[in-house]
Image 1 (cartoon, protein in one colour):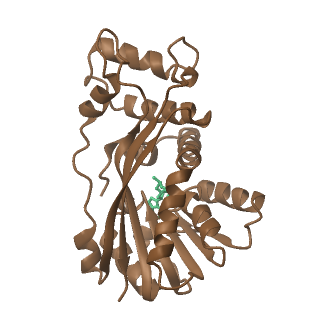
Image 2 (image 1 turned 135 degrees about the horizontal axis):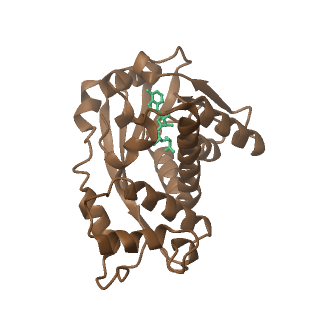
Length: 285
Ligand SMILES: C[S@@+](CC[C@H](N)C(=O)[O-])C[C@H]1O[C@@H](n2cnc3c(N)ncnc32)[C@H](O)[C@@H]1O
């Protein structure tokens, strides 16, 4: 159920242990940069869920938590809540535990390593279940949604979020002899439509409260982490582009991705971040 081909490689390549560890470390860095750069959006999203909640959540479950972007944002916004973070990866959960400790939140954030394809672990009832950029990774998302329904109390909320398209960073005038390099990179990948979870939610018994796109549009100047975030995103896209761009565009893209060259994205002060993420907020009746 992987709707986004650009996410595939970080999870599903079968390599030796060193390669797999490097993949996980790269994924962790990308997730952490995403959390740092898109902090304003996370504040907006968690505030909106607060408005939709019928009472202050006491227990929240983060499905496919990764390094804890959602778990930590939720802990910050819902100051009375404990968060249970579920993820397949012990390495990512370890990073989450370290961050929670550093922030003085260790007593409110618990990580459980679990494969949600095998079903839900036994957990206390929750008030809010959050699944960001994770549901499409599951082999049988409908089973996972049914588990979320069973775990939530009546009136509890489920928030499913997916990225509509990979972020864009560059001004339009970038390209060798031809502006619009980044637009051509995205067009060449053509990921197709994302999954619409509306019917899946209804099948699991949920009542949809809202399906809301969040348009992220962060203007320059942005924090220094943005350059590295943009570089990692473009590197990921680059790995799927062989044979899909002209040689000139590939060379221009390589020059942008390169850490040291004069055209490196790490040196640009004019980066912006444009992306859209959609959240489905649904209630257990
Ligand atoms: C793209 S990451 C998103 C992480 C996090 N939710 C965020 O927004 O930063 C997807 C996460 O889903 C986890 N995942 C994928 N399949 C899973 C499964 N079967 N059971 C539990 N976690 C899974 C991965 O380990 C990864 O951390």
